[in-house]
Image 1 (spheres, rainbow, N blue to C red):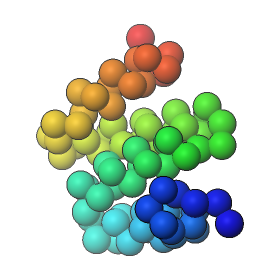
Image 2: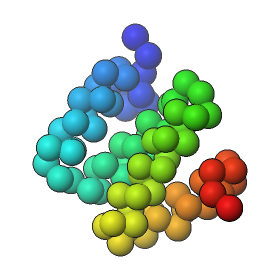
Image 3: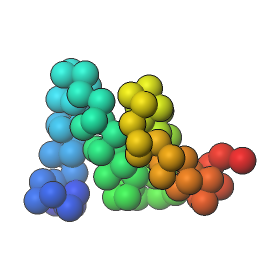
Image 4: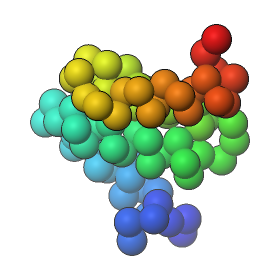
Length: 79
């Protein structure tokens, strides 16, 4: 099984994302979507996850938003 870097399989990352959504835990959503972006199988999937991390960071007013935005720009996902 593929690993997500936390000792959990990819399905573990999916479960963690679902739990964070259910709990409305924005900090976890930011962290987990950023992790998913790093482990995505292709650039489009990575962009999808990274965009979600960024949107949750913006909504939360989290300091991670600036770094996530910089990553999106570096990857050609935002002008």
